[in-house]
Length: 331
Image (cartoon, rainbow, N blue to C red; front, top):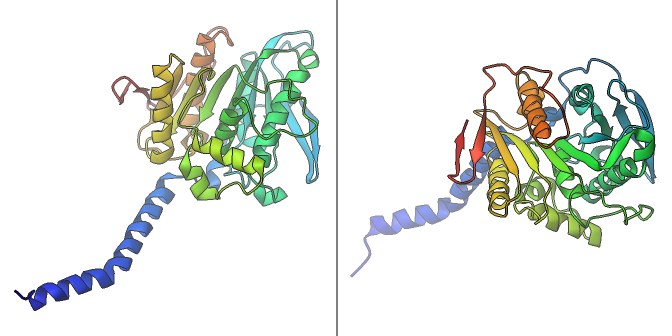
């Protein structure tokens, strides 16, 4: 029995057009990612702090130049204090960015009694380095803060890690037991934070799809593997809170998986979402205040802050909490 001519013609046309259809699917997927994912201006600081930083300290000298820490000190601060501290890393896809992105949050949390720090780290666009150096510098910054606790008026076991997008990724990697460490770091001092406050951290396979694999060295391979594993918390993961826009779909799904696994092992993890908002939403009004207030409540519940938050969130800025037990959002 012969195959009808029209059927052969249809099959031939389908085969010939397959690359076009595949190309259309790829283009559509990339457009969806671009619409919901990171953009260069996502990490630009949109709000000014109420005051300038209190001090700036060089914490590391690299072949590409010096790196600095920008400090906000709380009212009534003294070097003899033993206060909690918060280290906040900027975002920018490991390619660009500035510590000033988080000056507003650093100023606010200093007003609540924390010593806050916004570090610099090497990025590809400025220093020509890859993600392994970002992680190395973040771990160096955390160790520097802890090792200088006596002069900073902080308790070295009460240092919170925070950051947005790539900065959130660095916070998660600082919490890991191993990582790329500078040759002159005292690796006996753990960079592990006591808690994590993360603003749409870049997590999982998409990170490497966007920026490329870290490279061929052992340190670069380690970072690539660790980024891929960020859907799974460590057994001793610090208490964690994360904020996402619901349109930031791919990173959000990895965060939800992280939260489900954390809940299953008895580790505290909260994921809060802003409906119909995309990556970087927390940088703009009214979400900068809404996320800061929710982070304040979280840190107060852990005992790192005292009293009620000093800011009121816009009633329209509703954050919904992900429930890992039912895989759905509840207010």
